Amino acid sequence: MTLFLASANLMKIFGDTEIFGQILTIGLAVFSLVAWTVMFGKYNELKRLRMLNLAFEQRLREERTLLDLPESLRNKRSIPYADLFADAVEAYWRAASILKEKGEDNSRARLEHSENAIQRAIARQALRYEASMIFLATIVSGAPFLGLLGTVWGVMEAFSAVSGQATASIQTLAPGVSAALLTTIAGLLVAIPAMFGYNFLLGKVKQLSMEIENYASSLADRLELESKN
Image (cartoon, rainbow, N blue to C red; front, side, top):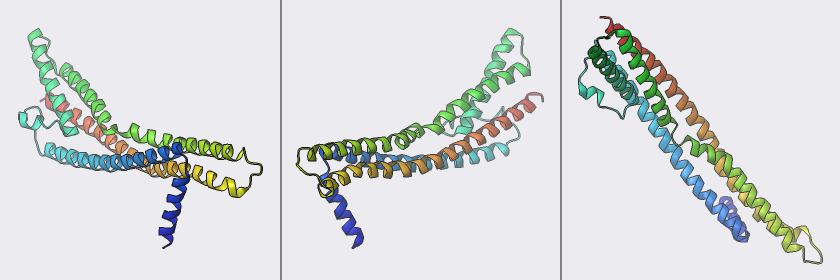
């Protein structure tokens, strides 16, 4: 019953809000829905990528050699670890072929090309991990200001409405001010969950970034050992 009355009161306040505040409130509600969708989608994406990474890393651990693995294992570009592996091996053999033609073939040069390819792949996957995070950061920082804008505008309209009256009391100002504050509430209701979601997802992104750096180091070590055999 209390919840129903509160909802009815909010609807009444929304109805009393002037058109600019209503547009801002509806816009913030849309931003909230989009932010929740992005947060859940990003969480599921990062969780799936981590599972794929761990499975692929385990698959490589079971192999005695990496340089001669079949092409099918290097075509799984949707997996970040597989993308690094494919770039590293392809760069290694491409450098070996070019250097052999020039009569300058040596394992150090091949490994340098492979390591450079790994670093480029890490940067590419970092962008993939961080996708949508800028949008969430924008929601976190922008929503309160949009709410504040609506409140300031509403308060200005409320004072403007009573300025022509001979006497002004709290009873005449209260409806306009409470309606104006609705946009601030809406902005905070958007920004606060988005802030917690952003920080949580940022932690996940940092975890995956650290893991891919460790994997890259391990991959480079294995390629170096195999190139000396």
